[in-house]
Image (cartoon, rainbow, N blue to C red):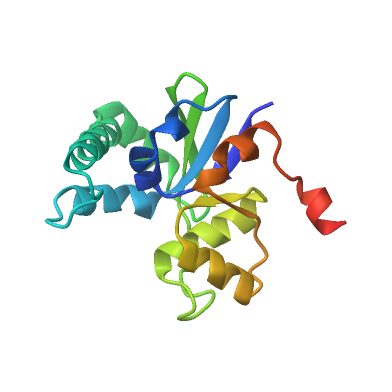
Length: 172
């Protein structure tokens, strides 16, 4: 059975293990985070501390940008993501499916979370799947403000895929 997670597009580039999961996965990615890829790629700020890792991540980001800029993919996104909360799915690699989501309502929590964080949280709530993140500050605020989402730190990705904790277990 395929495990599903919500995450930002850039996480796929930064964390290569997400693209070679131990079991089939589906990643739900808010459309706005795909638009962020171009900005991140051309930023003068390093993405990674190590120069070789930074170059590799930028290469993966470039590949992802080309993938989403492909005429077939772009057309499918434009036609499929018209209504709020609509989705379009693509097989990306072996055992990896990307589902792009047109999230709406980035003011749900006011200024507690930025618009991208809000889209990620709302997507996780709406789809009832966990959020994958490496942002400790976001994790802390999710707990502090009791946002009703399950999340895993990227470091716990293998556990999340192979075992995980079900929503029923969390609710019980």
